[in-house]
Length: 476
Image 1: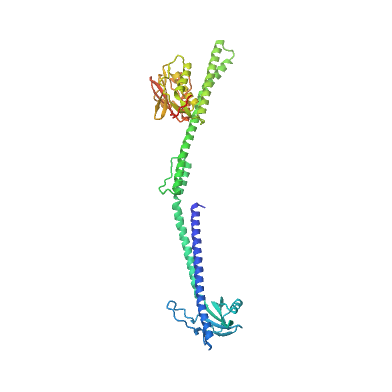
Image 2 (image 1 turned 180 degrees about the horizontal axis):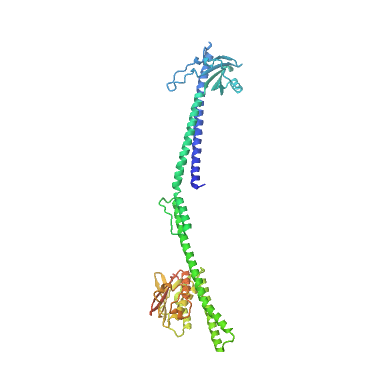
């Protein structure tokens, strides 16, 4: 059962219950009002007959005309004695003393409970069916010297009142039923209008699931009510899903590329080692000099495999999302420490780090040192000229630059330098496997920083690391 149908049925049920409850109350109150009016009319007439009975010694020819009240202009039909009013006078033994002529031979009944009430001096009201006609009978005692001597009964048929009540009940039933049917149709239409945005959300979700199109959004031009908030939340969720989907898609693509690149890089040294092993096992065996060359080649390829595995582990560690420390790091002593290590790696090279600012950045000390040392090592591999390290302040950020005077990078290769295993034609003749800049980028981004490279052919390259500036530098 749809929510639209449930809402419509709930609304209709509430309305129907309300209407029928109101109809029942109206019907009951009207029925009681008519009954009370008849009771009051009969009581008034019966008590007047009692008074006449007490002060009139002569017998009544026709009790219907024993009392004629003054005509009331507001109630012209309340003349006691009309043909539909019946009067009867009973003795305490139950014998009919006198009665109105319109009763003919009919005797108005009085129940046992009624006899007990009038004998106690109380009035009694009851209904009875006589010859298929429903009558309301009012019985009251005639009391003389505190003794009940006779009983006066006044009765009126209830046919008109019952017909009026039946008509009222039928009209209320038909009206309530019609209102309920109309309310169901109106509720169905209104609930459809209210739930239309939800239907659009359902259609959009179905289309997105079928087409994998996270660019779609739900259009809502209505007020910012519950439906509007649902639409906004759904669109926000779609945006988050889109970002997550693209990230997963990018990660899967990078993973496939990574596996392909690793397979390619591992295949060459492993193939070389296997070929050399086959040469060593060849019969007749090769000469000692050739064996030395093969063993040296195998040792070199093994070292290359070790470097490749270490770089891959470093890259995986950097991209694993591990939590790095966030502390204030003084840039000048850290770069000077890197320069000392670099001069040990290239004692015959010129490495300048004199133009340094005494500022601090927010980051991880070990990770930042690894990044700068990797950039310097990369420059040592690709240039024979001078290498300079500098720092500067820009918009509450600190930049650390490593500049070399090498051959530079071709313009078409520049957008790909941070990709794994990316190496230019000139770089392929130098040691390395093309993971240094990828590792550096992952470590810098993990510290909420950025890394960029500028290069011109035959002019050299500049790699710049930008990190947030620390407001309170600490020693160390």
